[in-house]
Image (cartoon, rainbow, N blue to C red; front, side, top):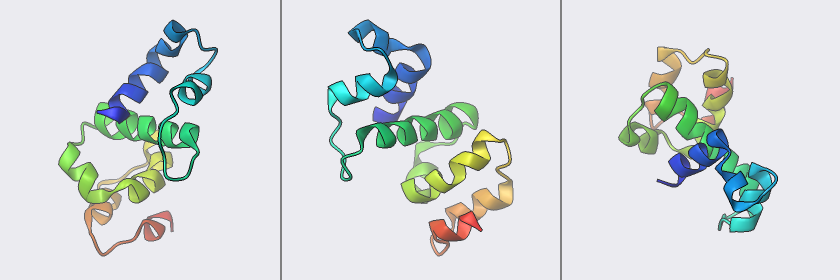
Length: 104
């Protein structure tokens, strides 16, 4: 999975094996195809989603797909600060709740 690979490369500094000075330079070198063209930002969000939701919290892929990237991106700061509550997680799983509602 791409997010797992990005997380591993960033966490273990594997970018150094490719003679890159940083994770950011490595991402630029591999030229990830993204809709926005901002590969570094996309790669960091994908790695964060894997780190905080899969590695740290043990969430399964099905739940992550159901929640979606936009909502997960809104939840990253809460997960980083260990402030993600069960109630917020349940809200995120609700298809009728938008990503903007999670920010409030």
